[in-house]
Image: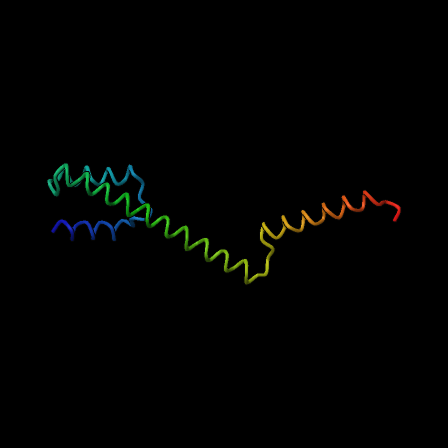
Length: 102
């Protein structure tokens, strides 16, 4: 029964976006209503925080991959490519300044 309750709560409240404060509020409510003991509540909070952080990490990774794909499809220059071009321009400026009359 406890596992079912946890799964319903995880699905119903979007574990990926819960703050620690909201999770602790939910834990307090469940303990106050006698749905779980204090120890079960602590375990519930720890478990939900871990799952929340994992979900956030996965979402960040997914977003980064999608953005990188879009940049490649749009054929936009990356920061590294721009830095490399800037380095080459600076080298050319130095070379031109060394040999101004040639």
